[in-house]
Every structure is written in C-alpha cells, then in structure tokens.
Image (cartoon, rainbow, N blue to C red; front, side, top):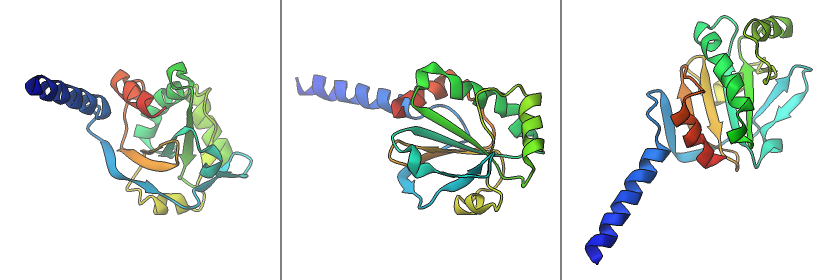
Length: 171
C-alpha cells in the first residue's frame, strides 16, 4: 500500500511540474516571486496607470518599441492573447519604451491590425530600469497578488497552446 501511495505521489508531482513549466526556452520562472512598489506608466492620454489598481487579475507587461523587429513579430499573437476567452481574467499592457510618439505607436498597431490592445508608455524608462530589462521585447508576468512570477526574455508565440494552458493555472 505504501508503494502505491508513493507511486501516485510521484506521478502527480511529475504531472504538475510538466504543467507548470512549459517548454519555452526564453521563459524564466521566478522561484521567489518579486514584489515591486509603484509600478506606474502612462496610457495614450498620458494618464497614470498603476498596477495596484489591477490586483486580482493576471497581468502581462510587454515592453516593446516600434523599431524592434522581434516586437513586430510577436505583437499580433500578444493581441490574440488579450482576446483569448480561456483567459478571461487577463490584462495585457504593451508598454512602449522606445521614447516614441503616440502617433508612431498607433501606426505600428494599425499596420499589424492590433485590435485588442491599447498603447502604453514608459517615457522616462523608469520601469525598464526598475525591472532591469536587457532588451526588447521582454514580457513580465504578474500573478493576482501583483507579484512577478515569470518573465520572457525575447520573443515568443503567445498563441502557443502549452503556454496558454500554463497561464490558465494563474488565471
């Protein structure tokens, strides 16, 4: 009987690990989730957006710039992620850190047929420094309590089913 219990425990442990760690090379899981004070950026009307107002939601902060080819490549799938009905408690914030104008950012979105996302800005690049970004695109994932639990360094396909199923755990 003890052997059966140990066997079941090992199977469940291995299955949960497989679910929690999707096979995405540039996905970095944060072992001890990080909390940040004052995560504030601007919306397209230059009004402050504070992440604390979104507690209770799964948050995706995607840092990008119009001159970034990989950003251009992944933005349509990020747009799809925002509208994915399986993740109804998800909010995506694409934050331009290229110190570019609203019109240039809106043209970028229009050219890519982005319909589900709004433009946000980190004009002073304070957040980029706070999060110690090394380049764009970089995506930071926050759980419902506002803690960073993972980040994606570089581009991915946000339509990846394995990634979406993993995100559903946090939704």
